Length: 159
Image: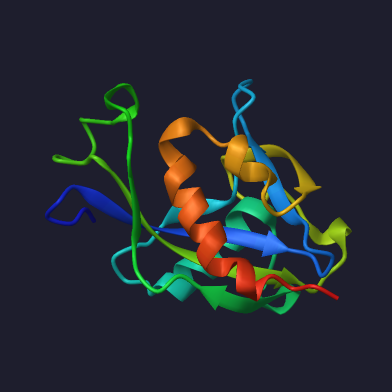
C-alpha cells in the first residue's frame, strides 16, 4: 500500500536495554549496512500489529519479551535514492513513511534470533550506545533517525 505521495507505511523499531544501549543489526548481503529493525505495515494491520510481526520476523522476539516505552507522534518520511527504488512492484513508490517505537528489552540476549523468517533480513547484531546509529546509518535515512532518536530519547529505559 502506497499513499498518494508515493510513501509506503512502515514501522521503525528502537529496542533498548535498561542500560540505554540499543540493538543495531547488520543487513544480510555482504554489505556493511547496519540499521534498526523496520518493516512495512500491511493493509490489514495497525502500526502496533506490524511492530510485533516485524519484531518476531526480524529478531525473533515476542510481545512478552519487550515493553513499549514510546512512539513517534506522526509519520517520519525518507525518500529512497532512485537507484534503490523498485519500479516494477509499486507504481509511484518514492520512499517510506514510518512510525517509530521505543521498546524496552525484558528478555535475555539469548532470545534474539535473526533466523525466524524464510529470508532473514539480518545476519549479525550488537548493542551500541543510543546515538551511535545516527552517524552509521546510510545517508538517506539519517534525518529520520535523528528525528526518531530525538523524539524517543525521553522514553529510553535507564536503570
